[in-house]
Every structure is written in structure tokens, then in C-alpha cells.
Amino acid sequence: MTSCSPSGFQEDTPAWSGHKPHSLRDWHSEPIHIAVTGIAGSGKSTLINTLRGLGPGDQGAAPVGVTESTQQPKDYPHPWYPNLVFWDLPGIGTKLNPRHTYLRKISLEKYDFVLIVSATRFTEDDLWLAAKLQRLDKGFYFIRTRLDEDIANDRRDHPGSHNEENVIRKIRRDCLHKLNAGGIIARVLVISGRKEHREFWDLPELMESLGIPTPVSRGFLTMFISSFVVSFLLLFSCLNITTCLHNVLRCIKRKVFNHTAGTRHTICR
Image (cartoon, rainbow, N blue to C red; front, side, top):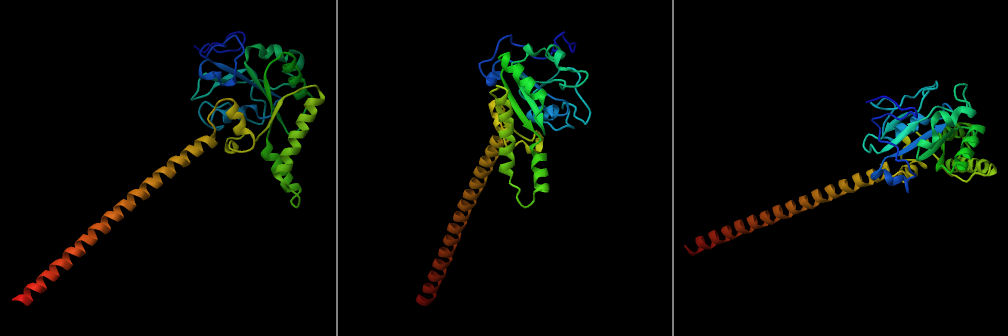
């Protein structure tokens, strides 16, 4: 059962619910379909893999590469939460996907929520997408990705004055300014998109908003369990030491008593 419907949804994928979810966390009780869109090469597939806890070489990962990887909408259910389905959409702004046919091609009405992914510079296509989504009352986040590259470039170009927080603040302010100038109100999240950076910047916030357990929370749980185990072992060791010391003292007392009793017996004799 892998044939696709005209809208691009595969039959073995949880069906579109047909109504707007009350919350992105509703995937715990019903399927939620999240479209990931943006210009070609912005890191959409990489972000989908990271949100699903996968690297680019893992089984079931969305293909990534320097060329345009996605030609048709492709679904990627979360491997542990199958009701949470990410859709990798073709990049907008190419010859194959011009603006005037893009929304019809991707069947935008089929998705419950949208992530607009933008990299390096804010583009007219980014603004156009955001404006269309807002006009259609479609919920979305604006995701500015590849922050790790921006920070590395600034560190290399300005070694004496580099400040990571300033870089992040500048990028976020620029995105908000250009969106607001176009009459768009949107939540802007600044991230890397790569799996090794999933605990940094705004990516944990994005995962939390989607109801995905974050690496930070899993790390805290692991740390808590580890601390509990270490504490238990230390307590057990202390109890053993106490028991050993008690036994040693008893042994010493017994030997002293025996020695004293033997001495008295000799004197009396």
C-alpha cells in the first residue's frame, strides 16, 4: 500500500484529519501533518531528519544533498510517534516550482501546520510564502536555519569582536523586521538544523512546541537516573563499610577479651 493519492498523500500514512487541530500536541490522539517548505537548498530535509531524531545516513532519513533533492511532497512519519508526520515539500522559486503554481502543486490545504525554512539571507520567496500562509489563516513558524555557519563565519571574520549572542540577536531582529514590514506577524526561531546541534539555540523550543521530548529533557532524565544510581551505590558502599567496621570491632573485642581471660587464668594457676 504505497500508492499516492492525487494530493500526494500515501495511503499507508495516517490520513489528514480534515480539521484544524486545537494544538500541535494533538498528535498524541490524532494524526498531525506538518509541511516543511522554503527555497531550495535551505535545509528542509536536514531539519526534518533532526526533528525525527535521525542523521542523514540513517535508515528512513530524508535524502539531503547540494542539489535539489525533493521534487514531489514526501511524507516522513516520526519513527517513534507515527501520528506526527512531516512533509518535505519541493523548494519554491525554481524553474520547476514557480510561485504561480507552487501552492496548487503542494496542496497546502492538506497540512495542519507549516514550517517555513530560510537560510543565510531573507528572500522575497520567504516573504511571499509567509504572506500567503497568513492570508489563508494557516498556522506557521518562520525557521531561520544554518545558524552554526553564521556564527563560524562571524568568528572567522571578526575574531576580536565576535559575540555569539549578538549574531543571534542580529539575525532574529532582521527576520522580524522584514516580516513585520510586510505586515506579517510570525514566531521566528533561529536554529542550526543539524542533529549534532539539536540541544542548542531555539531547536529545543521548536521540539517542545511540537510535543517532541527534547534531548535536554532526556539528558536531564539520564543525569537524574545516573545521579540516583551513584548515590545508591555510595550509600550501599557506606553501609558495607559500616558493617565491615562493626565486624572488625567485634573481632577485636573478642580477641582482647580472650587474651585477657587467658592471662587471668595463667595468673590464678
